[in-house]
Length: 217
Image 1: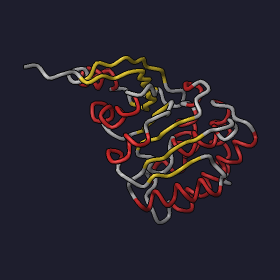
Image 2 (image 1 turned 45 degrees about the vertical axis):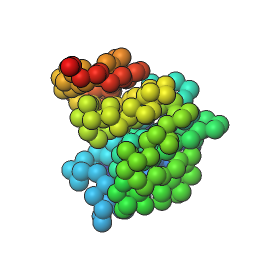
Image 3 (image 1 turned 90 degrees about the horizontal axis):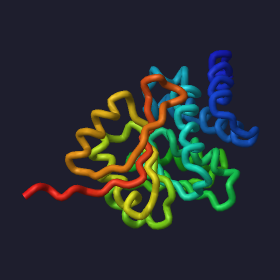
Image 4 (image 1 turned 30 degrees about the vertical axis):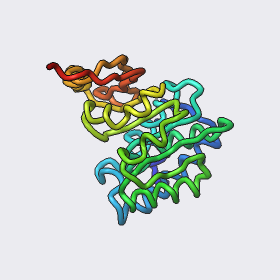
């Protein structure tokens, strides 16, 4: 691990403290990510030198917002953020079950390998969200997504989970208020916004319910 990687790791784990065992699982995930990134674009190349803050810590901050939740689904998991990181933290909770939905076969292969190497309580579903959401939704406590889609579209994708009582934890940017305003045209949303601990312009949208609004006639 380079000095910059070590410094980033230390800073990330100061912001969101984890156990030694969880830190080791995160180390395994980051090491594999750096290896696979050479051939697959898992994260933006410019963000790789700051992977611990930009991706790991950004994902870690979701878990304290979820209480004691054990059943979690991450939509469009991509390079594993937040899904793999959430699974690394939840591994210490008996009965934890994190499902990562990713339609890109190469990214899904990475997610499976990371889950295996880091011994995570994670299942990878290599499919489009729309095709599997209804089947996966029962019993899920949290549904998450990061940089997946504008909020109105994201609510469509997450609705099967929200409709059955799951809480939505969505990493968003500083335009989240505008997204909420736009989404209110088609959704009745109960939500609150938490600040990001890793990015001054970042926001975490916590959605407790989202009900489609019938179009005006």
